[in-house]
Image 1 (tube, rainbow, N blue to C red):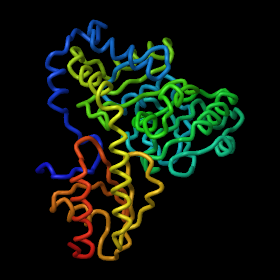
Image 2: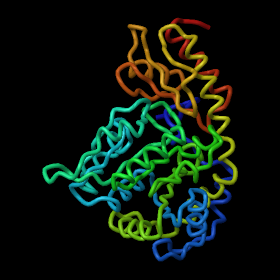
Image 3: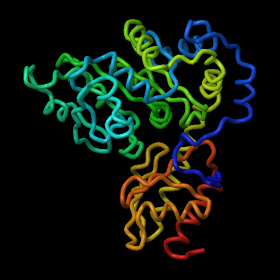
Image 4: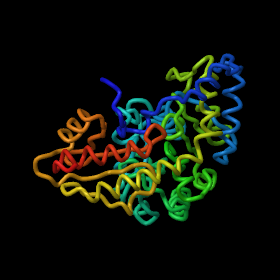
Length: 348
């Protein structure tokens, strides 16, 4: 498929900048599996400090971070409580059951979040007939929740309730740095009460791959065992770890630009009859909008927009997602709005 002029499908569509590629080409490397890659080791130390944890492990993907965390924290047959729209529920090919052997117990929250009271309703006393509840997982920012950022006190209250019940906690922080930039709260503060957390480098940070899982030294040692078990060792991983260093140096603060453009996109979409969106709900770089025009559904609208150079992500029958990132500039936002206005109403 030709590369669309404006790719709003996902922030995973970013491509390494020329400067990032130069850093990658010059990276000092070694055998990552043997602990001999200095660039990877430095990234793990840097990431652990950023997230306020004792240690970290560089892995190929965020999905692998989630799956390894579930496997380390839980034994097969145990239960994980999470929001109903969480990534581990619908976007990891059933890995929670296939790899960790855990049951997922979804909580119907609001915009991908739940509070301590809602968690409490789902907690139960140990019952030999039911899966043993072991872990509470949260996602910050929320994907299906429209890029919402968990309020810090709500996160801490959920963690406190989980720990009081004897459960451990995990944070899917794929876009945690978006939350950090949007709310001015450090990643370490967001993750303070969570036993494990990870961040992704291949989304808004624009690296070609990789994610970093963090926790205690004991947790990370067991995570390394799972890394081996499921083929996550990368040998000369410093080539892509160098891109992650570059992203932390140059692409974190600029996430704010993506958030501004997302709000601008949402404001423009709100002016297009036949589309529905709440611009006030756009906190980070995800924009979800609905379609009320009877002649369109999500797939047909996305296909028509793509034919005009704008790529969108259908997320249901009449719901569409658009994601801003470093490869989408102001002109791209304007072009996307023009295309959608023309498609719906033939407006210039």
